[in-house]
Figure 1: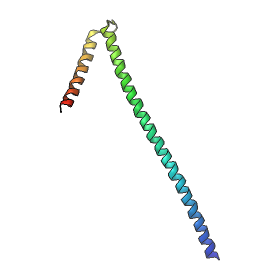
Figure 2 (figure 1 turned 180 degrees about the horizontal axis):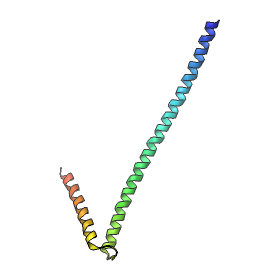
Figure 3 (figure 1 turned 120 degrees about the horizontal axis):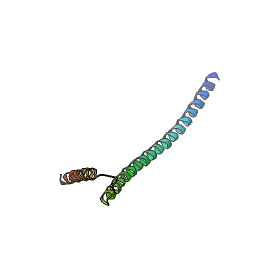
Figure 4 (figure 1 turned 90 degrees about the horizontal axis):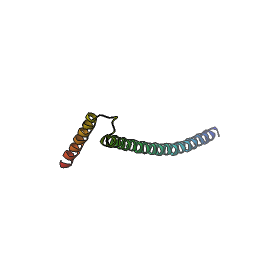
Length: 96
């Protein structure tokens, strides 16, 4: 009888561990999905920040071109040269 009771106890504990394992697997999957969603959101936000930075640069440049006296023309020329270099790099990559 003691042997049968011990086997029943082992089976109960095994089934309990199996159940816990399944619960943890489901929880892990849920957390992984959440992490992936957060990573995607983070990337989207980073892209949006980059776009807004570019728009801000363009806005600053357009204000300079409109004659805003707060910025000097030397800085404007440097920014234009920087943009031309970036465009040249893009064209070179497209030609490869």
